[in-house]
Picture (tube, helix red, strand yellow):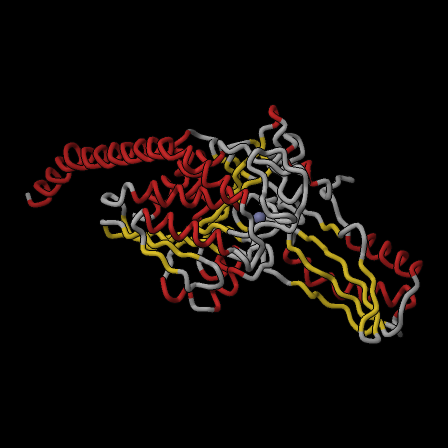
Length: 429
Ligand SMILES: [Zn+2]
């Protein structure tokens, strides 16, 4: 009898209460996401203006003074708690939702590049020799946009969102120093997210679990006595022959191929998986009575990294330089972006549910030459780093970071703010 009552009760719950509450929850989240979309549209022009302001007033790593002031004012106007003691010219905006939830951070980098390329924009850099050639101005506008959109939903917002505006990304110092200064211990962040605009089609969000970039190592070979130019060239060629590995004669150093539908990142047949490449010209120089040869190496497979130094040593000995060789080491050992597999999948599932299956494009490869010091945050907090497409090939806009003709289709700001405001709102619950 008891069992029967329990069964009836459960059935009643299932038929009436439970589905209703799921429906109610779903329709509530649909309403929020629609409201996020409308708010994103409402502030879009303002975000474009602020992006252009950053673009016109770029600042190098360690000198992000105007950038810091602009961000600080924007966040204070939104009513956020603003802290500027995290490290350097960094800013942290703290938005507390009115509902209980998690602590989630969104990180944007602030610095520009020491470039002086021709820029056809009306809003070109006013600072000679400094340009936003990596798109961090776009990242700043998106982060401010997400902060504004979520502020507008503070009543429904769960947990606390932390907007980290990180200085000195290009020098790989900002994230590391923020962590060393105890920033992370102070806030107990559960998850952390970031994005980078890149050369893929405008508005396309691309991601993969684990490594997004190849491991970037700087090989450093020290000799007792100087090698002649010819010896350096011969030895460099041999080392390249030893290390370079690509699939079926492909050329993953041709970075522009990353947007090629057949062999680019989005193709299961991508040439950007399982490779090792070395930079074209090795640098040879005397210093303090010794002689050095340095070379950047990009390897996709973490397990193969430890083989590089012993293999190069053996080769140098085989080539007859054994008695002159002092050491072979890595002098640059930056960590690489490592996306948490569970959070990556959760983000893909959520965004695909919201915008339709396939909205998020999976990357099958690892990008060479680039990296991001966001990797340091990911060593402490599980996180996901997304690529956001900024190219508009029909309009001749190619968002290839650091390239002389780097340009961004600003409509990616709308996609970034809308998608990631919804994602953060959901993850904070
Ligand atoms: Zn960058």
